[in-house]
Image (cartoon, rainbow, N blue to C red; front, top):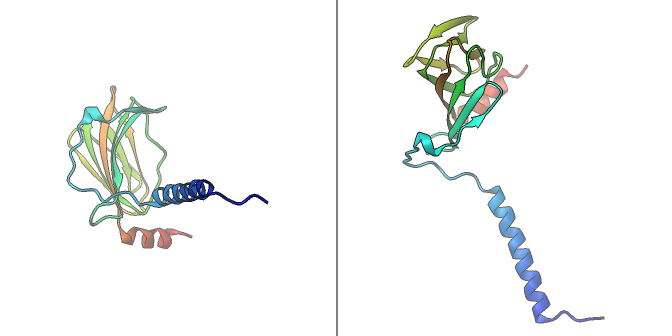
Length: 155
């Protein structure tokens, strides 16, 4: 039977410590967002079947469980997804182009500078109603109350 050497014990200790650190880092929550400036050109555009998106922020803040900010550019005649609903609320600000926003059972046409508020658990959608690309910014928030509203909306 071979006895473990001091070298063997050190290697084993370092391996266990490294594994524990890796798991601890993987389980960490994202840092709370502080004052931030993000240049449009520093965020890569990710192409999709309907246009492209830029993900600016998706992390907790001092008062929100999660703040998400992204921009979507839709190609003419397309929508990002079918009408849907979720517990978190969101604000959409139209930057360029003409879009139609779906809410309360109807489509409403709006242009640059327009603001759309999608309330919690309400059916909504957005589509490009113009002849060129349409870009809009989405600001979505998750609060401690959001989880309660998710549970209340379940059948």
